[in-house]
Length: 479
Ligand SMILES: NC(=O)C1=CN([C@@H]2O[C@H](COP(=O)(O)OP(=O)(O)OC[C@H]3O[C@@H](n4cnc5c(N)ncnc54)[C@H](O)[C@@H]3O)[C@@H](O)[C@H]2O)C=CC1
Ligand SMILES: CC(=O)C(=O)O
Ligand SMILES: [Mg+2]
Image 1 (tube, rainbow, N blue to C red):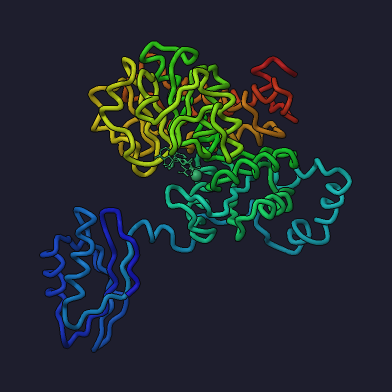
Image 2: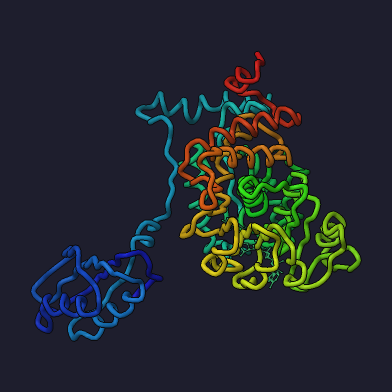
């Protein structure tokens, strides 16, 4: 039997029944007694001896799945061919496809889109490579590149297993910002080989979105690609997360009436996301920011093998605080968790300053569950979709790439990230803002529009835009 991971509130069981040994009523009773409710029956094939059916069974809780399957398995004359759920069905054959923009009806069409006429277009690009932006998919296309080394909270599961996430990112790019994105999972985790490969495929793309590449390799890969390519390269887990985190913090600080320059911020977990989140907060004016990892606070009086931490220590922790998370969180106004689940306690939070802000963003289990501290914090956020205030990079990457493709930016700089964060934050008005609503939903269509406009403005100001889109020129009074 091919049994997959089951979730959702219904499963589909394909079973083969030997008609002389069992009646369908017996199968239905067994399922019902095990807590399932048959909501659809499809007969796949039937003959005198054997009947194959798909049963769609509603379940009240996912633990019932195995009880139901076991109950059916015990029946004489029944064998389970396959168990699937709606999530798996949605993934059958992958989630995206390539569709031509014009149909090819006849030889004339054929000779235009393909040889011989296509040769004239190729020659035009060969003479003027910049024409690739107007005559190919480059101007609207992003590569979503992963090596499968740090996929969600699943760890190093490899490039094949990373594909569903990258296909999902491609769907989000298209649905929320009209960007065509290709999932590209590389069968190498060697830094130099990844850099070489991404450079080699870059002619087809207007931007590169690096995804789920583990630290510290992710820093070197992104830095080198940004230096060596003339299209933007953006590590989503670093900067997408940072942009959305900062947006949430802007609104949380407004609620508690504190300013970023004055608050004490403790960032726990100085990996890919923790470094980038710290950087954006420093760019935004944070002064009292302390990073904490497994061995306690990162401080410049210590020495580190990890060069990224040495450099981090030089820019943070001005009062040279030392010690464990428990020690340095005392009097902190803001806790940002990008480490692992369940490492913060209610007692720790009780030592924070008045009106503490706790963003426990580790996935899938946050550093502290909201229920443990909801009564003593001013604002609580997690990375999860089942609590209010979800901080997730999907709020950033579609709008960010819409903007950089439209203005043909050569890079995504700090000013553009800050502009993106401001766009997200300001999509919630003063009247709407509450402790349970500091960050907009991904379905809020104001977000991409406003981010696009603000990021393009920042790209123009910082001289990285190669083109001013017409409507931006109108808004900015340019011709
Ligand atoms: N909500 C969101 O949108 C996002 C959440 N995350 C979450 O943030 C976490 C970190 O992700 P990455 O930065 O990509 O991973 P990473 O592996 O690059 O960094 C994790 C860091 O946490 C540190 N750490 C582990 N245990 C610790 C402990 N007991 N105390 C202090 N530090 C500890 C590690 O040493 C490492 O430096 C994960 O749980 C991930 O799910 C990451 C990206 C986006
Ligand atoms: C949200 C995301 O990109 C991650 O968890 O890796
Ligand atoms: Mg990711």
